[in-house]
Length: 374
Image 1 (tube, rainbow, N blue to C red):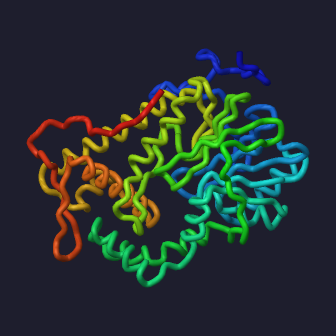
Image 2 (image 1 turned 120 degrees about the vertical axis):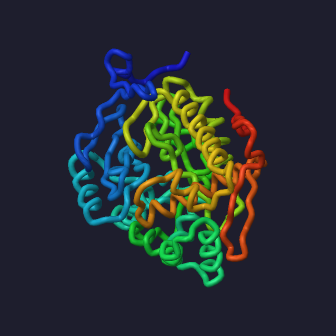
Image 3 (image 1 turned 60 degrees about the vertical axis):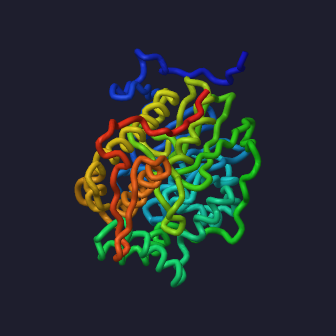
């Protein structure tokens, strides 16, 4: 019998907030303000930091670690968030910060890791692929790299101004990430001991190359990062320098390990609220992928260019970042369908592409995506 080390309160249907659309249970009230703190369990603090985009916030986690604390993710680099962190450490944290674990390389997760290291002398921990992606993301591409990036986006858009801006996208990332330390500790063990608890490392892929999720069996908590989010889905994009990759299948494959966790685990996501209902959410995300793939096949019953597909999938105005994410995600879905033989791609002399359903008059069968689940 599993030994519980703390008693949860408010997880019953009658005493917790329920998301009617997904039937997820939300057992906790989120921090009441940006920069606010909520206790999830003894020695586990939920901190919410601001984001200057539609997501509005990122959730980060402080874990009691002996006489100090381990921080999981940091928020982006900004003066506002540095001030909020100084306040959190002064008002809520007894003892020193001992290390920072970054789930993956995106700016809202790694943005202040270098500042934390400089401020407190702590080690920053990441997986090898995420370290490489973080350093590459803020480095000016070579001329050959820029040519490859331009070629990729020309294949998926006729927006010449947006395509031209992609040469300098590394500057956008750099503006949100404090320089990483010269040395970053490598996460390459199957578990990490933090204080009195062991946290199993579960690697997710697709959203980023080697995303760390942390699961504590004794606490029945899963720090899910961006791998499983309530209410929204993670962006799964093609890297312009790896245009033939299949990150969507990697993303789906990553659900296998997560689906073996207990159904009543509390999921601590990077965006929105803590929830119970991991298995239901995984099923919903997989079904969402199927629906989008079928939608693209339907759009391509008549030959379609990328602009038409993009506008159908992502209607409305987009800023520079959202445009890049939308194009990258559309490319991931198109690559998956091509690998599955459900659509065909032709390239014109100017480098742009067209897609058509392989059987434009046939039935919209389920795509043959294989997701191992327990």
